[in-house]
Image 1 (cartoon, rainbow, N blue to C red):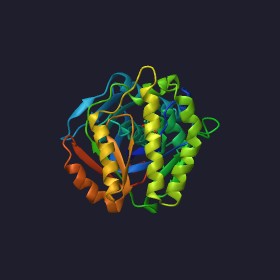
Image 2: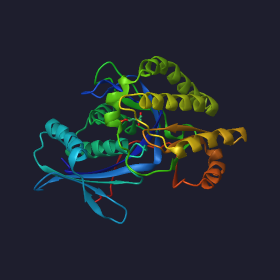
Image 3: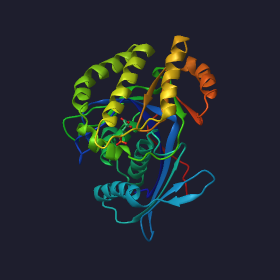
Image 4: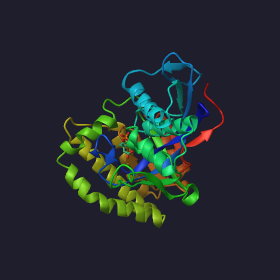
Length: 333
Ligand code: PMV
């Protein structure tokens, strides 16, 4: 057992969203989902098993400031530690420090990169040596299901599976397959009121949930065809309708979940205007107000130019498809 290890994992943006579960305990989704790893939005996590008084979970902010994580967030992290302790027969306490390159909880899938980095680091530190598929399953079980899509590389598909062992994510296309970009447009970096962990529980209360699930195979087929043919129009049409379908379910569930704000709508309309002028980008939106613009690399400069003129746009992250979770040499402490 190595005891101390650091891993880095990307966030991912879902082209087909995971929303609602068919098994809460096992974190099983209602359908397959598809995503792309984000090169510029990632979490780095160091875990160290040793002679600590208690288990400690900390976040490192820019400038090196460390903040202790407590409550539910720490419980979720330590539940994953416990899983590895039981698997590998470890008794020592642990210190965990984690660092993000982007704001957490604002619809940029911070929990995905966080749980993928944590699980990869735990596997390395404890000497666990299962397959990538098994690592994806263990990551899913940590609770943020979408995190299992941040283990493998590039464009990733999470097979909903028949049972726990068959519900894992794997590469659909590798990193260099298509010069696709996700421009994350940050309009609000505050924490959302109701996170996805809770949102999944309400999905089935929406009267639109059944029709969404019924239509998903068609939408998945369109996204797969768009990726296969590298056809941005086909992919873009499908991901916009899919994002709206997910939000329509969220907005009509009990309680109602409104993740958009005024800027979200302004930017959705801006993209329609841009397309008329031949500047081609399509939106998708996770559980937050920030939009993700999916476009080909050749469109990035023109889109950036348009976005920089919009009041209320705080920051842009330009992401390419990238590798999944990796062990890295440099430790955070
Ligand atoms: O993996 P969770 O429980 O954080 O849920 C993710 C939910 C969405 O980000 C809205 C969709 C997705 O598939 O990433």
